[in-house]
Amino acid sequence: MPISPNQGSTGGGTAVTITGTNLSGATAVKFGTKSATITANTSTSVSVISPSGTGTVGVTVTTPGGTSNPLSFFYVGAPFKASLSASAGVLAGGNTVTISGTGLSTATSVAFGANSATPTVTSDSLISVTVPAGAAAGSVGVTVTTAGGSNNGLSYTYVDVPTITTIVPDSGPTSGGTAVTITGTEFATTQSVTVNGTVAPFAVVNGTTLSVVTPPGTAGAVDVVVTTSGGSVTATGGFTYLAGPGI
Image (cartoon, one colour):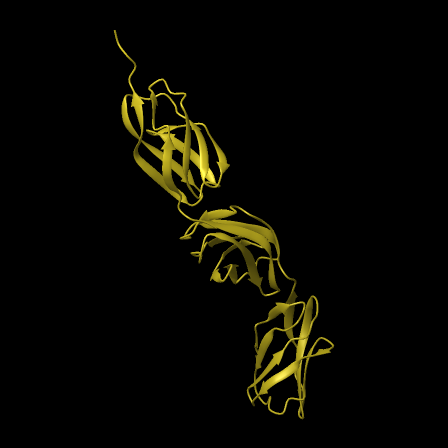
């Protein structure tokens, strides 16, 4: 007489189906000493909603013909999430994050806002998941669902691809050291700024403004690239290095 699923939340509420023979007219289904709510019954199956409980209990079915042998049902506590390996990423999704915590071994889904993905379980304390695409830039809640229930409390921020509007000034000496202000959008999570492929010191003033100091370079127009959690944007020929005078 199989039982499916054979595990569920300590809070109860799990839909469970017991299959076997001579089950029609079931008058009671017990999870340990607690009665379950019978929702459907045929000669070969009984569907119930599990009561609350803890640990491992025996499940029995009682009919006018007697009481069955017990089947084991395992109560699982709700998961606890401790941390996300990355708290932000591209709006298009596709990046992999890991979630650490406890009670994660039976994880079946991870929701990022309204969109869900199926995780890969590494252990009871670690799962990984490919982040689904977001509906819009911004913060969403992260919810892990296991046999023991659901838990949230972590957040993940979808970041749109940055844009560059202006670079002021847009030229300076090849020796570098020019203080440049870059304006645009989605700069809050800026990770790097390069000028002609060379990393430049920068500071995030706000979500639309970066303060950058140009590194040394060679004369001519060069690309400026801003990389954020949402991706990269290139201002082609956005800064021009000026050669010094020669006598």
